[in-house]
Amino acid sequence: MRKSMHNLPLPPIWNVVLFGITIFTLFFAFIPAQAFATVTFGTFGALGVIILYTFFCLSNLTAPWVVKKLGVSISMALGGLGYVPFVLAISTESKILFIIGSVTCGAGAALLWVGIGTSVTYMSSAATRGRRFGVFSFVNRLNFVGSLTVGVLFSTGSTREQVFLYLTIVLIVACFLIGLFGYLVLTPLEKKCLAAAKLQQEEQEEQEEHEEAITTSSNAININQMNDDDNRTDFSSILRIFTDKKFVPFLITNFLVCGFVKGWVFAVMTTFAPDLSSVGYMMSLYGCFVVIR
Image 1 (cartoon, rainbow, N blue to C red):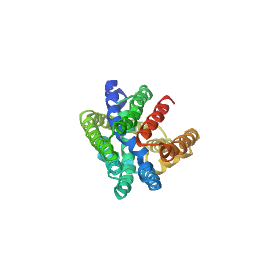
Image 2: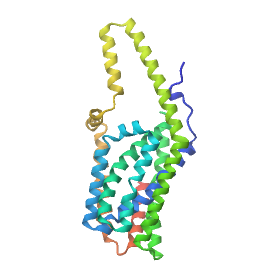
Image 3: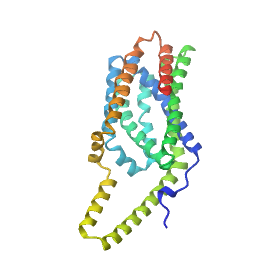
Image 4: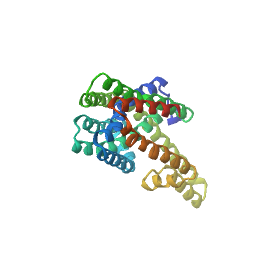
């Protein structure tokens, strides 16, 4: 019996924790930058964030294809680099760089999050997937420490230019860590999983050929059509998810929480802060609530 993807040995759980730390490092820098977009650029900052999430939404339709072609490691590293102009723009207070960064960050976020989902899937089995996604999410959600750090830096007299220049450097280091982790862990694992999946597909095709020999042609056609429908991942299959009755409640609640609530917090509530350090402390408190929730 050939080895299937489900029979591959799982990497240790500390690999998931380490992966979570690499992504945590990236959002350690990005979350404060997003919070200071409106504080820095006013209404123009809110427009930039709208552009960011618009490109994120649109890029999600093509990101799976890009990740499949480039591989999960390269895709996530490129996606992480897309965040750099956005954070650097807060340091330089450049509106042109901010808009460019909004576009690259939105497109890069799609590559990054598709890569994250693929990576954790590679590092888990059907039985452990929920637990390992939970471990990854817990580690990554601790990124509110970035906002707390920003508050402390402003409290000690650092300027906006200095603080976000520091965060830009942290972000570049995060991209390096993502690429390094990908090279050492994810790329070999991806090759094994893809090879195992190919062998599994060959076994399935052999089994279907055997079934075709002992069943009627009409039944064989139905089996092939069913398998094609189950395995196809294209634009239309992605859109069909939005009509799934099980998915709609999640879509609505996620839109309310991450759309209205998060949008108000980042674009409006931050402008209520009396000084820059208060913005950092305010957002770190909000991050704590998100983790508890």
